[in-house]
Length: 380
Image (tube, rainbow, N blue to C red; front, side, top):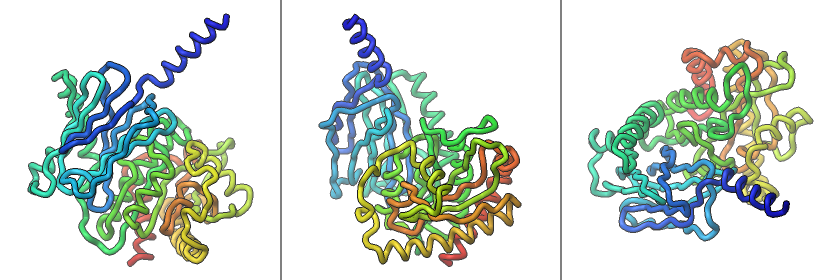
């Protein structure tokens, strides 16, 4: 019986983690990842902007990594500034920080993947270079064609042209993603609606600001990484887009939260608990590690609350939804941010009257414009 139980445990373990990353190496424009399993593994590739660099994110669902996987930092390299890996909730993500004008190609081989980099300091910034920037292939030519077509389609809908050296940098954070669907209701997932509205918000803000979006497609970003993306870029503001959920189908309305060390009552604490539940990456880390001192904390809180009020006013005037209020809450994704920050709960997923406002391109654009104009009012 013990032998049977042991075999069952090994079998379940094999299902839970089908792939194990055991090594990352980098040399002269080539990033090579080696897996313990001798099979072909193709990562999900996506890119987000951070300052003048693009971060290439290679995600491997249902994977783990060995404890001695190295990170690489080389500011003098022509192609990258650093490579590092994280493991969260059964997914391994490899982050490759690309220098300006660098192009890449991802190739899947038996037991490993390879990222080949080109361009860099000597690359031209013409349209042909931009078109060839993203490419993903496998050993099988038919698979390569399919992957490349899918990648190009995804890039066309999610990437953007940098807006230049503008005065302020805004981080737009679509909530949830990947294995974390967020709230569900009426046949929809929060992660999808949040991404659609957030993408439109990012495009709206790019008219006047440098904009970073923490995810541009359906993949998971840990809560601490979302804040770090903004902090590394010395961002001036951070806005996270979500939709709410309730056990009651009659719950409705829009609300906006700003970071407060102490939640304003039990309701704010419950909402924060729901949004924090997927990622314990902050754990018991003291607040002082993220907020330089109490003076900065109070200044950020005051600014965040003021912008939150204007955002809510604009959303209510645009959608006509019920005003639930502005609250201070201990959200993990907000407390890691060094800049003023807010979290917007657009409406309730399980209330179709709320949700219907965000199911059409017109509704999403109206919501994005309402939020964007509120942010614009403060910074301009």
